[in-house]
Image (cartoon, rainbow, N blue to C red; front, side):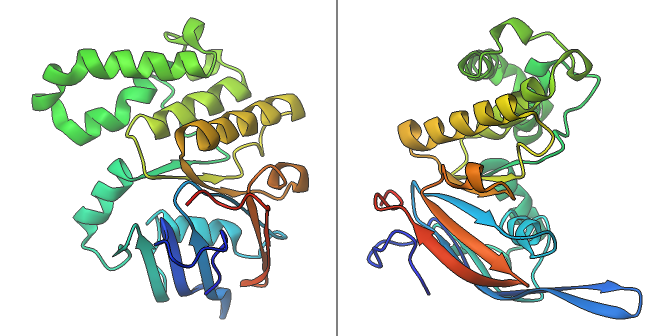
Length: 249
């Protein structure tokens, strides 16, 4: 199995081993992933590229425990996670794995600040929330300020631009202090300027905070800003390109 950082001595932050996934389409079984080995080192930033239908988003969803592989294994920080009980997988999605999608999935009736706080409310429940809400609100406000949204705290999604909504979605993913951030075409619905701002924000989080990131994109310019690039073709890893700096280890 290839090590994207070139350093086989360090355990992976996120890893798939011979992942396979099929879906039924009418009377046909489509084999979307055909034995994918993937590795993200701690502090790494890997872009996954490939044509539509190559399995990029499917791979990301399996790593994020939104779906289960038909065969193979998913490991997070030295622990196999795809075979865990459902409740434990839910806990990991709320604590260790942050996800950002092309569609922002913000709750329309909530403000930007409330949307960011939602994962913590789910984690702690109402009984514990009231003791924690002041510190949580402060952290959420600081995150939104980091993304230039300090003046948008009380705005609802319909009052925000696409780029602003995506930054709220990233802040929501980060409020749980995840070990890894999975981003599925996060700039797909944005104009070039807004998309560049999102990638700059992710690069800064990786560089300054050491956040491990997997980014799915079809845009070669965006992919080039990651430290490593994995290309999927017909459900298999075709090429791996690594920046000389490599993933942080």
